[in-house]
Length: 197
View (tube, rainbow, N blue to C red):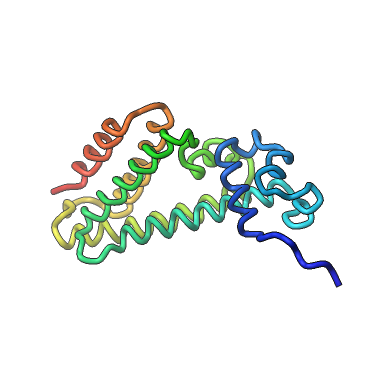
């Protein structure tokens, strides 16, 4: 009978997530992960098998947290479709303003898409599955907005969902490039205007 684990696996995944988020997959060493998680190398590999497997667990934790948050904002009761999208963009601006103050490196998902996803099919599939969930919730918000009159009736829900997703990525990249809160709020405001009747 094996000895019971003396650590919280989810806490280790969260610590690894912060490290991968800050340094990226290629920039994170096994030693970085040991320091972040507090685990010796043997425990790290016995539990997570490889750096790539731990990266996938960390990315899964991040995307499930962020997608659930996006879903909660887009499901806000009593708000019209456009208000829900505006609230989501405001939350993204808040994220990037906080990242700028803390020195965090933008969005973990965007960072992954622009680095390792292109050369790692398993990670690419994880990112793609998350993207489809986010697009689905945005599509519903757009359809609701067309019905309640807050979004122009001629806006195609699929195209508009992709538009908002691209706008979110653009806000995040602009934040990483040094845009301040006022500039990010301006980008979001122009984006919202493109959806209005």
